[in-house]
Image (cartoon, rainbow, N blue to C red):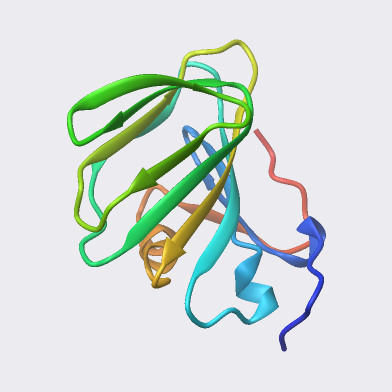
Length: 132
């Protein structure tokens, strides 16, 4: 069932040792992209990785991070947008004292499903609060 307006409680949470993701587009029924809210805990982050055939955008909602794209590093803060071309190596590390909150968009969708299959992922059902 798809919805035009999605609340965070409508969506399951993918929990990792570095933070959590809620893929809001899953419930919305989007076909050509996926979008979710990513929270990276202080001092944690995603190690270097790529998404072959998938373009990615990260929009910084709050916090401070060290962003690497194609070997280039830059400090990212609220209001900044990061574009990652398909297959380009990237990494995001929270270097602030508060959670780094991002809106992540993949086109086409797919990497979010792979993240959910990884052994590091624990999935919390929609409406339930993740326990630390």
